[in-house]
Length: 183
Image (cartoon, rainbow, N blue to C red; front, top):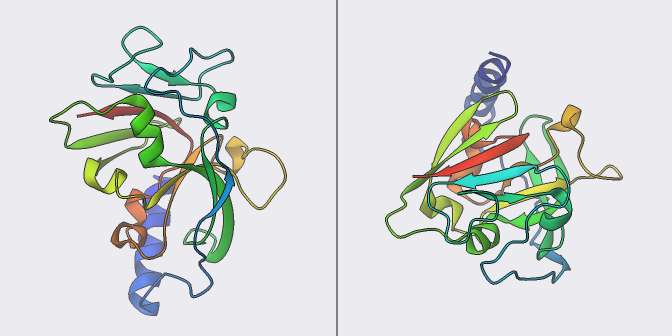
């Protein structure tokens, strides 16, 4: 319900104000080249924060691919400054481009979408082409020190690059992501 209210308010603000993107959005900056697991993501050593199901190429947790936070942060990470529509300001985030996460998971042929589920069971289904576009960052850190707490949408969340069409759709901004089902 809370997400619906926020989305409705954002939609009204968007309609009243026009473009929700910001002039201050910056090009990605590489924070760490990171590692590549070459399709063999190590099994989580700590509590998993994100899992993938739906036929991932190299499962590490039964039939799923699961990541703990430390493993996510071992991958290539970038810093993006984007307009955050829910706080109506530019925010700097650090995370892994989602297309790189999907490359590690291994997306089977025939997958056309992914359904993302948050800790509160909120779900959104996104075309796989949008997730492979390079316009989505799986965020683990923001302007504040340390990893993002659940109270701020963590431990992981999505942000969209300001110049992507999906960035203006508040329904596609999802936080506290726990699971991705490839479909």
